[in-house]
Image 1 (tube, rainbow, N blue to C red):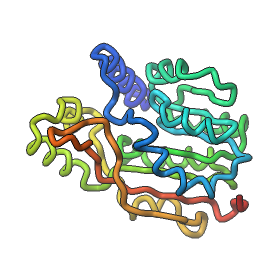
Image 2 (cartoon, rainbow, N blue to C red):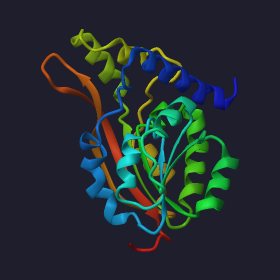
Image 3 (tube, rainbow, N blue to C red):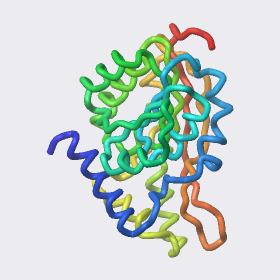
Image 4 (tube, rainbow, N blue to C red):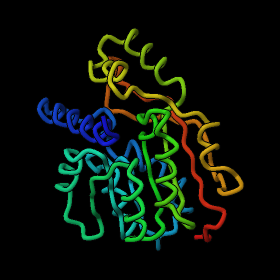
Length: 244
């Protein structure tokens, strides 16, 4: 099975099922509960003259928010189905959506040649990438960053599988969709602080912030609270990056 089949087609099937059931993906939350809460962290460090890429944009809710603050924004996702939905969000001239597999180095190079160094926003993507592919994924991400881009990324913490197991066990109202993530082809494989820092070594990158946080979902418990997954965020940029 090819790398593309392991990602794009899997997510196409998932989004198709969600559309048929008229349900949003559990990560499709309103910007007010996601990117708006983090914007103040990365905004001072994102050079507004650079292109901005939202990796794993899904149906584009967070990407649309970014386009209101930056003039050139591209949302990319491995799922054609998700990008099809995202393209119907707006006709904003500075906002584009493209199908892209982040394991495709040639496409990363082509995009960098087209738009130059880019800032990157990424929310809940790497934890779905099998360990043996993560290095390739990050190397392609660095191609997009170039010498002057900064990245803000949020990923689920290493204890994500245990957290979900306990959540499902203690809350029978948690929908099957979340429980299925434990047995799907792409179970959540959390990202550790050590792993994050190893991808962006201090000899090449300046770590601005690395901190525990949570990934918001749209799943509501019987208590009325939303499920929030344990996570970590990292804000870093090349040591060669110019000040904003």
